[in-house]
Length: 532
Image (cartoon, rainbow, N blue to C red; front, side):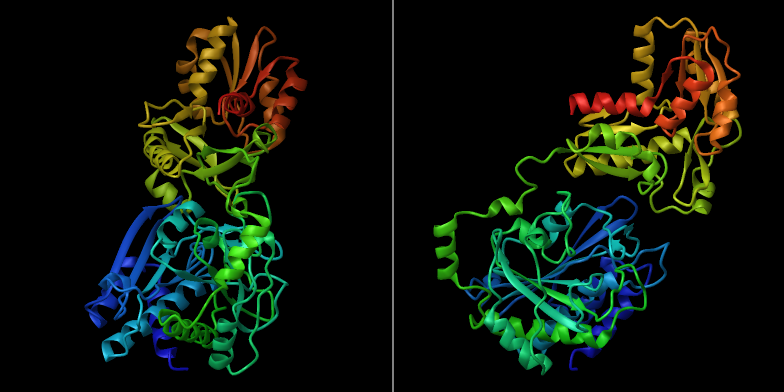
């Protein structure tokens, strides 16, 4: 267990809600001043993500103008922590822990004079505040940024062969405690397991090697609507280099978001295996695949690169910016029926990552200030001043557009100034106003979520002779029926003035009043479906 020291040291750094890439960089540089340690910070949905690249030069590596092959070691994960829901280092962080510990050991070897022949590049990301993703049989850890962004900063062109290390405990496929490797994956082909890697595994573990079964589904990109074992082979979707998965495994099913589930001895075994692979690979003595056989496969069966794409007939991505949190299923109700399967819906919430106490402290409206009403994932109703909402929305628009999603929809009927958006942004309040103008409405009935919003709504729609009542879409369904009953019969149309109102609530108002009802969420989603 000669890497246990490195594993423990890295674990103590990562098991901290305040950990950043900069803290890791200082630690590496203090111990090994010559280390090439790079950080790129990306703002995610609910937290910043620090992408790390550590380059350890070999004596005949490409960085020095040599020709020895470069090994890439990727710590693949969603996040090292699931705060605030889960306290502590999560099982999903084992990939980052293993990769960094192996990198630390190789740095130490070089300092002592045991320099490898070729370069080794270690990449991973650090985020102690990652979201949890529902999954069967146990929840997954999600990442605050898209898989495209993760791959962009971790899967690098200079890598000649890649080991992707990932926690692989949340399944019923493998019941071995320790680690396992996968078949080599290259350009959409699942190739046979590398004999060289099996031999190294036998030496480092002292037991027969273990292979993790994978399927064709597992080597396709996330977001295609197909189930995956986990993200261990996502790096293979964006490179033509051979990729081997190194899975940290258990005998029982363990959720990736669980704390207290990291077995340091297993991580040490996996990190030690990586170090030994690096020695042989950089000398050209460890082959991930048979080049001649691979070329023969391509000649016989053609390119399989289609498995590295989203498929032949997938829809484009559209963004939904909610005023609460993105994991609220009720905000996609009715909308999914309109947009899917034509589009992949990417939800993002302006309150992602904030607790109720933080929302109340930082974003609550002052007395008399205009506000919007929303709900967070624990069912609590919150108020956000329109000025604060404007700033938060602008940040989320930038995130979506930076991920290439250029057609987005605000899930709010509130009135805001202009945003600095580059693509198409559907703003419900402007769409509703324009449609009402085109309908020649003489008297408009409006249901707003809160009594304190009546005056703002009156100003916004004064030219339509509005009659306004209040009922929250986040309260009792009976309240909506009672409020709608107060509207007079000479109303031409009822506007449910909040994106939180659903199709079911619309039907209740129609039944109670006998009037026509405008539901913003389906109205605007229909326009998005038409133009995106």
